[in-house]
Image 1 (cartoon, rainbow, N blue to C red):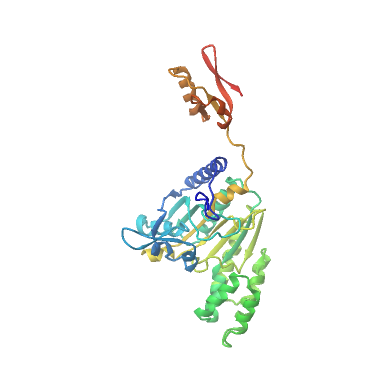
Image 2 (image 1 turned 180 degrees about the vertical axis):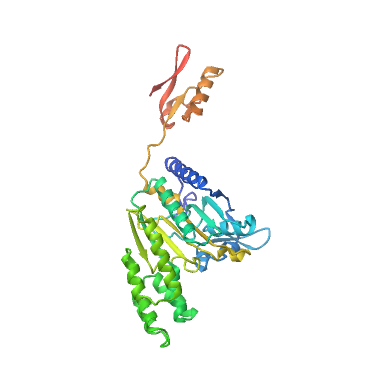
Length: 389
């Protein structure tokens, strides 16, 4: 076996793509900063208990773990930066009012989340803490859509869901925790046969309307008409009523800024993590969601401070693969001349203007084609000028 071969679903980023990703990161980060989102940089690894706080069992399976040689405790390589940002808000910043935070960095997954996905996503995202109203949900969702547009992604489809629909059915019908977990698993797996089997075995004391509603959840996907159908078909539990009202308001606000919009009342992504509205953005030629987010009001509680929170994240490496490749910037080749102050000032001026200038080192004249230059500096009289190669 060749020792230099990388593990499966782990790849190097070569110059052209690396530059494209970095340019995309800068544009998105600048956009977040002008909206008042402050940059934080959590560590790549910390104690497992902190990384798993409030995130449910899914994160545990996705996380690489190592033993800390100093303390002997188990440490984890982060699989998601959101819990870390929640810890910073709750434990370190400890602000009374609203906090807007953003981040960008690599995360590591034990398994890829899709056949075409890497195990080392480059995650960028934003989180808003301290506000529980729809205004903050809308701010974060608009920011996500604008960030995708800045990244060069076109024709965006947005899915809106709300975990309170399923949670309201479970609580209103008095379904026990063990059965809730089974129902969650079959709905998440889109296992319709399994769903029918579980609903058939529900206790006779369970409201018949709730039983029918659970069976109907996978069908409640589509445009705004779905919300009207849901009101007719689902029990009038307070949590469900509020969830449908919130989805309607947000859908009305966002329908003009996306190409298509749909409601998915069976979307249980992050069910043990999210507490309210969830959303996912999609685009053509990509089967996976290109950006995800939602409300997660309870995560900060384990850090000693429960705060309303909503946010989104996306993978810059995946976004880069969806954008048409820009022509890699080419440079200007400068000769290696000792003691020529005029040449050095010319090179400095060009670099200050943002031009790439590559100085040709002695002995490498025959390797010019590897420098990625399409122009060169030549001396004409007393002036260094640029000419095409």
